[in-house]
Image (cartoon, rainbow, N blue to C red):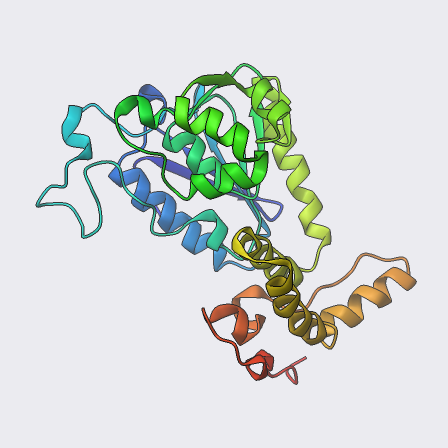
Length: 289
């Protein structure tokens, strides 16, 4: 579909979402919020797409919310959708909700929502000289998109407090050294490297990846015991699936695997239903294979 603030392309089963307001350094507004969420939703439902990359056009990844309207950007208006406040909006679809890996190719400056949104992705690569800043407290507000959890869990309480409570600026190189990004690269190499890295996911079983991703994000707020109880029924279930048999067969036969199961229709019911404790809901029909 046609978008105003983003571009989407897909090649070799890897999709790229470009934040496309380069004249505004990809500042986030309500239109971008809706369009990114729509693109995420559509790509997640496309089983031909195995990984999604988010990056920016121009020299910035995203410099934060569009504050061109001044202080009114933080004031709820009568014409806004319910739950939305000005141009500072909470995306209706977050990267961690998707069934496939989402990678942030931080090609340039990432400020405010530019970095908190990137933290909601599974993996990040960043330009060495990019300016990174959780600037919220310096605008009189607080960080959002669960960054109080994601940042603290990734780098620890002390470093999270350093970044979130001061709002100070760091470089992409420092971001990688802290562990907030997997690697820092020259700006021109960030997207090509991320695209090449994303091909690693093509070798993995998509349903297994979807389940493992869900457990990783649930693990942010789970105890070891809770995760053990969550993992084991899922492990027992997936060991009985056609993809498990194919994984072993392809390994023994020294050939690429041919995965047959699809996240769009083959995930166990328990994974889809929040708060369910009945392990019997793990069962799904497998006779169509």
